[in-house]
Amino acid sequence: MKSGAWITVAALGVLLLAAVASLFVGRVHVPPMEVIRGFRSDDLTLASIVLTELRLPRAVLAIAVGATLGLSGAVLQGLTRNPLAEPGLLGVSSGAALGAVISIYFGLAQIWNLFTPLLGLVGAMAAGALTFLFGRGGTLTLILAGAAVSGLVGAFVSLALNFAPSSYAAYEMSLWMLGSLADRSWDHVLVATPFIAIGIVILATLARAIDALSLGEAQAASLGVDLDRTRILALIGVGLSVGAATSVTGSVGFIGLVAPHIVRPFVGHQPSRTLLPSALLGAALLLLADMATRVIPTNQELRLGVITALMGAPFFFWLVVRLQRTAP
Image (cartoon, rainbow, N blue to C red; front, side, top):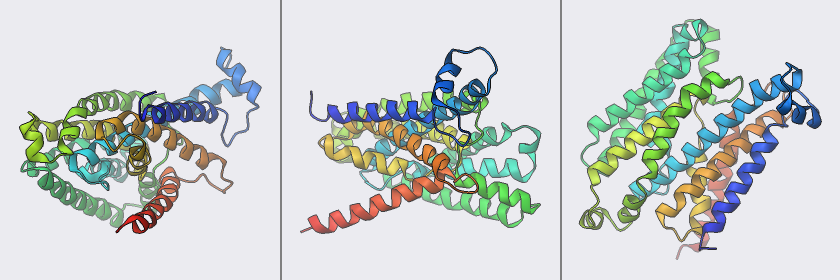
């Protein structure tokens, strides 16, 4: 097996196990044999409804969202040569949050539940376009523009919370921003996955470019890499995929940071080799986090963003300690 290929196989194995396990785990106890029979039954039994209408779309969304977060984090870390780069770097996640908050603020979510993800997607694309408009001068300019857009959009989100028309609306906004896969249906899958798929395909084409960029921008340009085109494609790919993901799940952090860091030591630190295993591991991590929200005994289900933060923060504390020990 080629160097580093085993980490891809391992990540795929963990993903498959987590995907199967997620169908058997939930707040509503369904015996395992009933779940298995639910696959083959055309009758509207409790097991078949729980499996096909609740757990299966939730698992599909977790895989799609986790994969795009892991892949986007790996691409952005290679593009910016910054190990702390993550999918929210370009302001896309904040834009999606603003779109969703607008939907809740004006009561559109009560009219049609898909208004929230649709407006979230519009907000993500608008934020990405604004970042591109002001960040065309280079990678550093793009990062600064993304930070500025994130700050501006975050201010508007805070403004909406401050002037929420009711305590219920403020509560709904806060809950959405914590991130969750609860109550997601096949409609949410149909809204998000086409954009996620297009974004993933675009990001996957940047493998050669981010390998060249690891040598520096001048060296990459001398190797024939069109830097402006690479940045534009990265922005479009992240905007489409992460924007669509955030629009249906809310804000989910750390997956795009943690997955590439776990993978990188096993692939010789070559950026292009981190892409596929980061996507697979990101999907597996999000599935495991979503399962944790269902099995941890609490009065109400924990939010996905809380679990991913609890998973991610200790990892980075460990990373800091390791760097301190290895630093000269």
